[in-house]
Length: 147
Ligand code: SF4
Image (cartoon, rainbow, N blue to C red; front, side, top):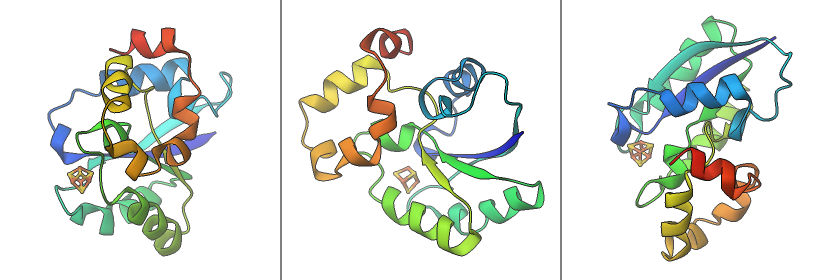
């Protein structure tokens, strides 16, 4: 069993979570690392609280009270315009402060975002090909199904 906490970018605080929960169910994107037969449970779900991400200081602690094993930073932090400039700091902070592993990504990158970012400088500047490497391994067909 894997107990998962999810932190989304507050710019998308009205998001209904449809893509993330589809990806969890179908083991796509950041959730492809979990076998289909492995039981997964969402033990917490929060926004970062808005720039500069004040909720990140304490929501992983809330997740831990529910037995959290791993924190996923939602794909919105990767595909926003611009991507979250604090993604790397969030990863280090959560790992160091709470001893929780961090996975970058929830649902696959929608193809329309991949195509936009390939024409923009942000991902290169953020070294997103390395930071979000697992998400970028998905097929274009799958990414298109998340548009
Ligand atoms: S860009 Fe980063 S810090 Fe700002 S709202 Fe989104 S996740 Fe939070």
